[in-house]
Image (cartoon, rainbow, N blue to C red; front, side, top):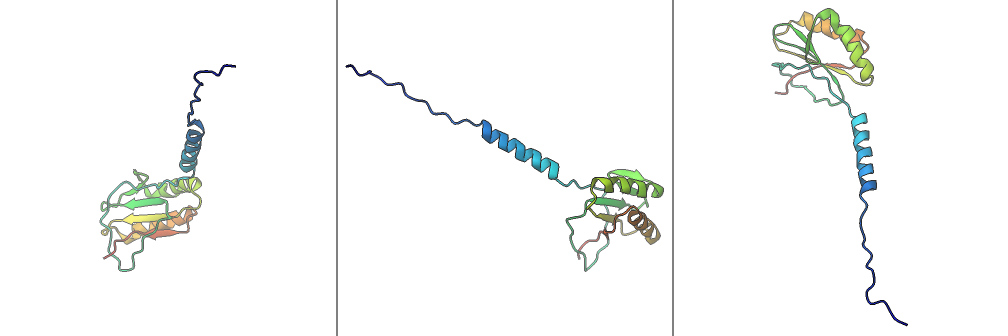
Length: 133
């Protein structure tokens, strides 16, 4: 009996397909579960407050600039449009709150009117942005 002179060597290869499937599934999971913040789109000179606290669970930002203009989601809106727009955004993020970013020179009456319309839209957790000293 003869023995074969050279044996066929088995080639080992790593199959990356299952790993790529897992990575894509994780990517889809993180995209779907991510919370997107709606910025007001304008920079403000915020008032200074010694008791200012940073909050990270709020998702809606409403801005009032020095010219008394109201900004939501990088769009200028009228006072009458604040409530319907906030209701629409609240439907997207029902567990979120709101932050009013008002310039230090904003009229208090306008700030209270915007705050009132946000609360009438169903958002109870409303804060006013301030800078720490």
